[in-house]
Figure 1: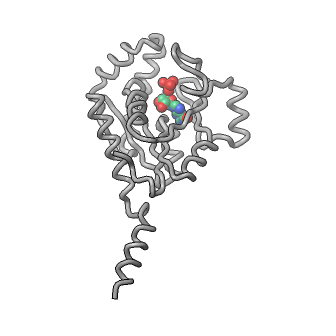
Figure 2: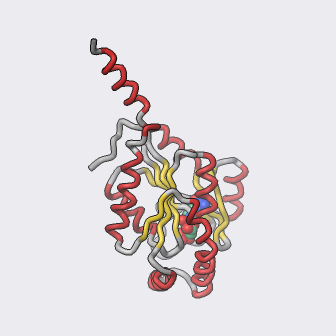
Figure 3: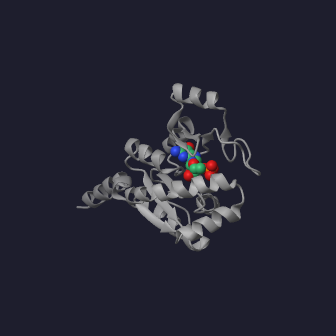
Length: 210
Ligand code: 5GP
């Protein structure tokens, strides 16, 4: 099933606690449909398996601050000691082409984007419990014990943001979660504000019949 390409694209913001499985959900989503995935800039060190320009654009603090000065980011935020930000040019270009763009970003950034792009949809992905989040973060094995603790503490603070999202999706079973998020995005293409041309066309057609 393909999203209706004759309509304007949607900006989709996906957030969730670190370890909630957002990255995996996003990877599955882009296999399912022709979404444009924004690649963020960050000052965090690459993890094993990270590829510059694919996972992130890895920057020094100075390079990142230059991007801020040059207004090259739609939003940026500091997360557990590092900068993360969304390069502006790619997102605007894809939206102009009518493509659906996915941003996988943390909550402060998500709220900034929602202010600038009120039509964006915000989806929050959470595991079913804190214990499950901790289990997944440990199983991932990409962070030191200190960083895991920082991320778990941050997750507790982030609970207060959940109510600001348009949609909350539990990631208990990956396939079901991907399907749920896909269906949410799919439904957006039928929103009346994305169908103004269609409404006009149907109205004209109806009125042209004597
Ligand atoms: P990680 O270090 O695990 O790759 O990412 C840490 C957090 O930063 C995640 O919650 C991720 O969604 C968020 N993040 C990644 N890119 C961006 C971005 O461009 N802007 C913001 N605000 N957050 C981001």
